[in-house]
Image (cartoon, rainbow, N blue to C red):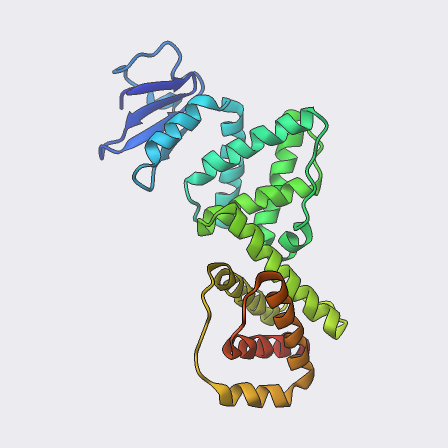
Length: 276
């Protein structure tokens, strides 16, 4: 393995045995090196590959400009996610999270911390990702003596949600917001607190995430079954009343007209979680 380009003292561009472009990370691995020099394998700490064509040049530009400490922090956080939860992550996490951490540190030095209006929803809907965010806060405390609020753990969690489903951060924000709003309507209507340990609750939450994705894409779910809709509506009038509140909220806030089939599945899920 030889140096193709020096990105900084700790990062060099190379190629693997398959001829694919890679970025090799190691302390001082690029110091006093030139194109064509052999990379000492014992100094290699990490190898970044590019899962999608066209990303290589983007990675090169980014790694050339960002300080190595933020890449190191990101690497440790990602390793924690892989070790604890065996997550399948897009390689974009290294760019997005390194850039985010640089911004966090810059704002912290100026006495700024950003409130996270979705923190409660992230905590209850994305437990693994939020745990990774909490690990990141502990790491930043240890290595940079930063006392960050849990709001920041929520923001870091969103990067890992994004890296698993490869959606835009704006989409993740909106999906979480929609799901949280629907759950709040259900809990308020029935004057109850849903048990997030319950299997039926977890199924309901998953259903809502897919519903929110359809809402954002404007894709109406349609499967003709008026008979079952009427049966469930008549059998569980209080659940139907709750669903009508959800329908009115979705129309008002998002201008999305839910189909009878979507209302049917909402009624079924709500009756299950309410029954528990």
